[in-house]
Image (cartoon, rainbow, N blue to C red):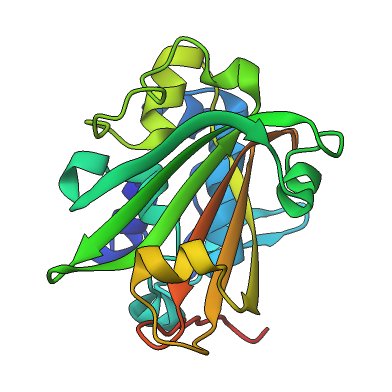
Length: 230
């Protein structure tokens, strides 16, 4: 996907030109058809290309909205090493899942899941709490049970250890008051709400693989999004 974006930006694939066929891309990059189809789907959804029935896929150009896109909450934790940011692991355990997380993981209520929780700090103070919830079987044989920071992102670690591949994330954002423990950990003033971001990570078939929960004090964060209007 990034290679195709670079070619569009450089003018190798100018606006109005036809993209190579799926078979040509499979042969060039040495990847499977589902990988090519997924990359083309994302490019279409982001506005880089368009599909014309019976003709093929054509270049639209770099979408203006791409210039103002920001990483989504939790996205960095999925891709960046823990060791690249300041923080500490504050909890590693098999615990009963909250109702929302159970729903996102397709688990029965009151069942247990693996939890890895980390307190992230920036500029000398705590800024967010990041919790990763996994089905118990997916945590076995990984380094997630260690209190040491991961030298790689969660996506790469689970792909190398368990062979799973992340395809997309379904994100939910809610606002609520923090618990006493959350307020203490984050050093939050009284009566300050939290932004709670839940990212349900799924594979290409829609099966739940993990949930990333990010708690953000509302007085220190704002969320920005950008999207095209078709």
